[in-house]
Length: 281
Ligand code: PXL
Image (tube, rainbow, N blue to C red; front, side, top):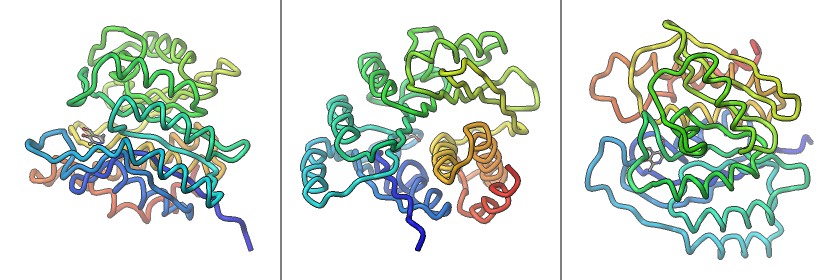
């Protein structure tokens, strides 16, 4: 009997909208990994493009859930955090990592709080600074350029040069224990890239995918989930970035023709392609 890999993801449930837990659970499961969830909040939809959504903050449920898991001696091989419901949760999450992560377990932090130069509704610089502290516990930290700029107190722009991206990735080494995957390198016209930087060796790799000009929500969550899955089956950060980048691109391709589907991407249809991507990279 082979031992199963067990991971915990901490992010919100957006009941409708193809993001966060409803994306992480199927994608990570498709890698054969057991995925437990700790919802940070429950929303009727995500906050990008919808109005009047409900928001139930679950901050005060976190310590009780942790306590129960302590009694049950439940531990995880990895903890992956995404959209967090309140600034106070960031302290609770640090406790959960300390208490529930196995020795040599991995921490993935997607500082999901901003995109396209702006914070998501409800987030601010104080939250970003505290998120920076959580990032420091991460073995893998996965910001887009907007989140990177808020972490670094730097002005964002839609297109950074290759040198500027390199400089940002280098500065982000203060916000990880080991790897930073900086998404959103737009300096090439037809390709979208990311930088995979290893703080311990000061190595930076560039990974590119064909660029599809389509603004889609939820792609950061699709990418992060496929990255977590790939890493936890033993792929290197560069291979994981390739698998996750290509998978996300395929999900966007499935969606671009449908004008009624701006709220997320149709990743479900391309789940079977993970099999080939895992063989390829
Ligand atoms: O995909 C990031 C995300 C997750 N959860 C909620 C969001 C967003 C982005 O807007 O609103 C609730």
